[in-house]
Length: 264
Image (cartoon, rainbow, N blue to C red; front, side, top):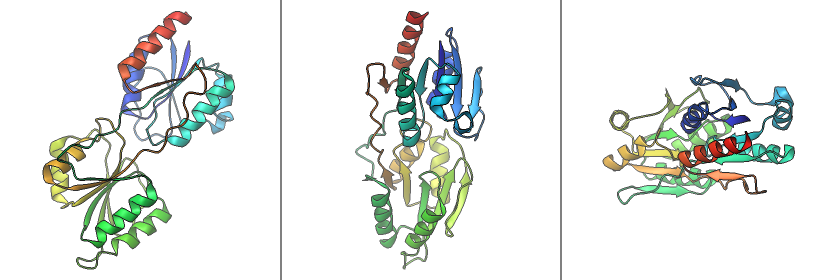
């Protein structure tokens, strides 16, 4: 059995390490190299355009099933994976980590899309937020200009400042300081960071998982507001009986283990 894993997440690496112990061939794919994973299997990076697209790659490499363990916000990749698996008629399995859940002590504002998030950010800056931890993914030039315009709405203290934290270099607003960092992050370090930069607002995505959860725990302890982008609607992952969606890694592993055993 030959499995292509679309990875790039901590869950993907953990699941791959367990699956390597089975009598199957695994190919692990990442969109781009931020940090090479230490996995005892074939690793490819940079997408499938050089192979003629994902569908062509699945056919050429004679992949038996596609396992999607990408980031919950990687919607384009997930949609393409679903379509390609359906096109070549192979099983499509998907793992999505559970969302973070708001607790009683949290001060969260949930935005349904990017437009609402920017509107709420503008309101927060206009009413006094001045030091913002921005961990909402890559920034392009258009967004950087929009963030600068929002920063200038703070007429009391002068332009607000963004502390932009990301794994790889990104476009930056004028009023920004970049922190390059890769999770997992721990509570003590997150508490120290929020205090050092006098953060009064966190802007992030509802990515879920443990690797970056500590900032929310630190915000809870320090009484800091969180502006959180909700997940987009998932791709329709039930187009045929071969497709399965998992929210638990152990269940995903057990299912694939049994599937491999039955196919041998």
